[in-house]
Length: 171
Image (tube, rainbow, N blue to C red; front, side, top):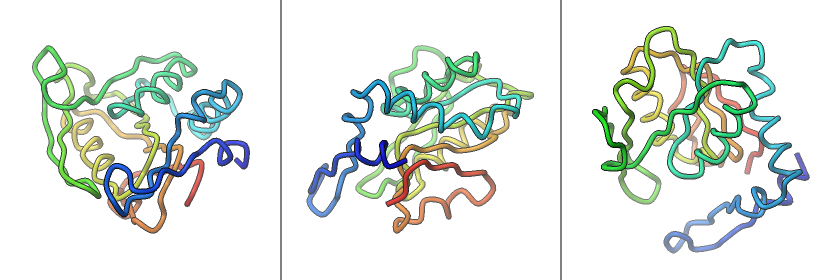
């Protein structure tokens, strides 16, 4: 994991003063590190009969799509409002530095689907909790929530008490 940690760059005061942003762009630029991250995200779930991977906009699309590809399943994008062209479910939530909402197509998942939820970062847990709610609203099951980076001091894991949480790097 040190190879991955070496590819995470700290950006102070982004997106606002007092926030120390964990930038994953050096990691996704490095093909070997990116492949390692994808393999480590999916490895614990290889025998779990995953039927879909969902990822949150925008960086969850990077890792989620690659994990879906490796598992041989489809990818479901969880998008910001107004970005999906068909009927959607919407959920609003609080971020550590504001508020946001996510949407999912109403026909993206259904009963019997076993979903791996993927994002680059777990901070306060609001985005992940909202994403789980969207997936479950469609009758699907969240098998686990997976993250490249977890900011332990922000307690995001506590927002996900009913889910398995798998994070590669802890800060």
